[in-house]
Length: 194
Image (cartoon, rainbow, N blue to C red; front, side, top):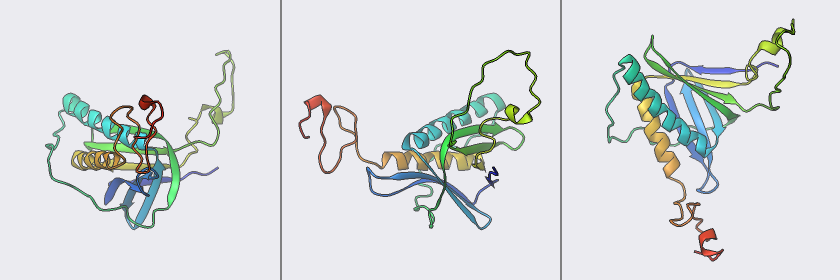
């Protein structure tokens, strides 16, 4: 089975965004560059964790490699909607992050969710298998989106991702579940509407 690697090194634009009304939003990562537009779908929690882990990666790169990080600016960056058409290439199953010391860039890789769970074989270490395919990583045959960003562009992506995640329905102050405009059955109120 062939797989595609959508590489943007660097992209003209790389953002997190949504389609749909609050409560029914679909989250996307979208990269544009070289006349190409790639959109991949993912979960809200993945966007939130991506922003958090990118911040940690930048902090660690500064600590270990002395990378100059841009200041946290209160300036609102890219606040435009996703580019159209928003055609889902694949649904993200795994996100990978790395810092390339040679180019001082952050590498983000979104890997498609696999159709089948990888099998784990337990056996003797002395067994010799001549089949090289067994040595491949389980996600090697999956589509992926790879983006290389400068620390400044990474900081802008983090800020936008946080705004997108926080733009949804406000949480209930009692149970933390999202408040629905049609009403909310709060478990802390024994099911009474709030």
